[in-house]
Length: 225
Ligand SMILES: NC(=O)c1ccc[n+]([C@@H]2O[C@H](COP(=O)([O-])OP(=O)(O)OC[C@H]3O[C@@H](n4cnc5c(N)ncnc54)[C@H](O)[C@@H]3O)[C@@H](O)[C@H]2O)c1
Image (cartoon, rainbow, N blue to C red; front, side, top):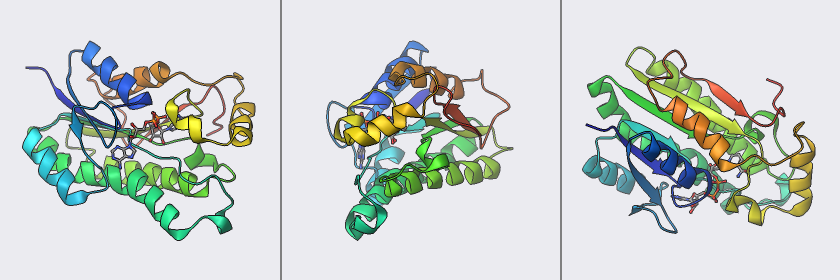
């Protein structure tokens, strides 16, 4: 029987391309998103709804947390509290909610793969993207904690940390912020979503067996650690 995967943010960008890539690996994939053409409409910030929905549609063997928002492009002191909270709700509470719902079943079955889409911003901090950078640092921290909690269970939890990737997300990023980010990539170009999907597909497979709580750089050489 094929393994079942859930990809949040699966209607667009990295999530959509990852869903296709996992299908090519033979997985039975469900995409979840608040907008666009996903298999199920789901707001990952709604913890009870996420719990009920995933328990009903599961069990899931693979979870890819790709849903995310950039949030405000502004210096920290100009970021309204409400916008800060929204970025944290989607980018941090979202993966926590989905993990809470699927992890117990993965533990019971003794196998699982979770991939959280973090960002290089979470390691380095991008100016005028403090909420986004802080949220992705939190994703890295929660990946490391959960990876250790599950290390002996057969459930592996890893994160990917892309630099700027050519997806609709960047349509709302200020041109000078985008320029700043590309200028820091030694390869001198944007990444493509299929390049990220390839790494995620490996992390979701049996081919990945001795990594957990790890953060995989996919940044055209930008990451220095
Ligand atoms: N594009 C980049 O440059 C880049 C770089 C590093 C990390 N990332 C991360 O990659 C992930 C995917 O981003 P992308 O570039 O594919 O962007 P995208 O905007 O194309 O896709 C993100 C998807 O998440 C969905 N989403 C937003 N809020 C949601 C919610 N509350 N519940 C469910 N779905 C929700 C959106 O509707 C959208 O379809 C994000 O976590 C993002 O932070 C992107």
